[in-house]
Amino acid sequence: MQIGILYSRIRKDEKLLLGELRDRGHEVEKIDVRKERFGLDSTTANVDDLDIVVDRCLSTSRSLYATQFLDSYGVPIVNTPETGDICADKAKNSLALARADVPTPATEVTFTKEAAMESIEEFGYPCVLKPVVGSWGRLMAKIDSRNAAEAILEHKETLGHYEHKVFYIQEFVDKPGRDIRALAVDGEPIAAMTRSSDHWLTNAAKGGETKPFDLDDRALELVERASEAVGDGLLGVDLMEVGGEGSGEYTVHEVNHTVEFKALDATTDVDVPAKVVDWLEAKAAAAADGEEVTA
Image (cartoon, rainbow, N blue to C red; front, side, top):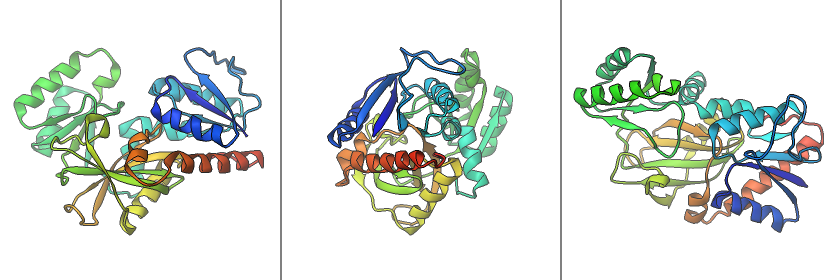
């Protein structure tokens, strides 16, 4: 097969994926979005003969625009622009989960610091303030007092980008020092791990310790439902245990669309790149048979 990799930087995740694709004899077209031009009816990128393209762009904005252009040319692409649009925006993500009756933390969005302060006071301390767009736990704040809230809101209001004028506020979930990341393809988990830290942010990118995790029936159900809620695809579904470790009670706080998997591959016995490529081959074959790529 001829498979395209849409990227803006080759990380270890992409190297793992490229290695597996080449080991299987697939032709790989690397598409660096920083160097290509995307017109209304054609692109400088070599996409005409590709069976499928997988979006691995590091930059959210590049990912969202490039996938829309490729989709408009009729190029099969995963994840779809629709899934990317929902997952890239935390407010849209929360709305999609809530519409699907997937348990997710209580959330409010406001557009002025005065309204944001009202939300924060109603949630009580601590609560969490997040940027609507972002990853790796950056620019997230656990707010422990009114003084801290006033300082953070004042700072955000002075930042230039319009996204900083959208105040995304969530309840603080008292998780047991860890959260759970499940990597799934069209709702079927490949593998899962816990990410633990003494800090309230447990992201692997923040240095969280990772361990394999066996998803129980409830977690499996929520991964499937959360995936479907955002349009399916290759996704990272993040869950927190709300009743303590091993309680079997979860809330889904986020679904990620250009998900990193190097930490998971190093943590579990599952050959994660191989499972991802299995799925890509199936999606490409389906597209070749005329089936619509829906994720």
